[in-house]
Image (cartoon, rainbow, N blue to C red; front, top):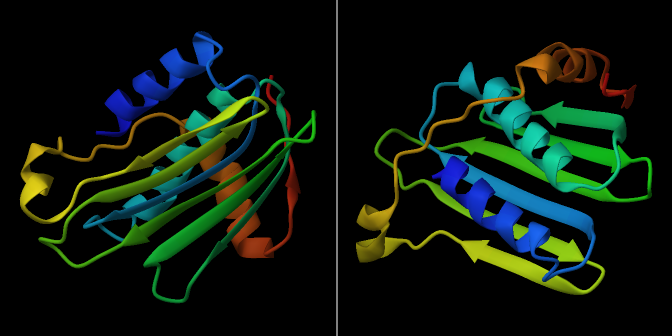
Amino acid sequence: MIQSLQQSVQSVIDEGRIGSPVFLRCIVHAPIEAADTVGGIAALTAIANSWMPDPPEQLYTLDNADNTQITAMVKYAGGQSALVSVNRIPAGGEVTVDLRLVGNNGIIYHETPTGPYHRMNEPLSFSGGEALIDTIRQGLETQQPISVTEG
């Protein structure tokens, strides 16, 4: 699900239909293990980084006490920003993705169908972002923004 959504959004960006991306909000609700919330937020952050025209400068991450939710805020060198969140729901719950990508010439919206239409959705699998995991964990431990650079 995430990979096909990533490809669809990337094609819209590549075609110039929204101009240059300036803000992303992406919230995922999924029945995943608590340990996978860090991997999930790393994957979403990597996707956000791939869509923005400038490299990330700062990453700020927070979670809650029972690891059911992690949120990351990314600030980019050109002034863009991204807010991504992974929320763990009970087993058997429906995976949903709520995405808003604002460009300087348009916007992309995506909301995962729910109810009887959710069976059309592909299974959720996070991949990518492994290089960000240590930075995310550092941010969670310090509860402070972390300066980042892509190398």
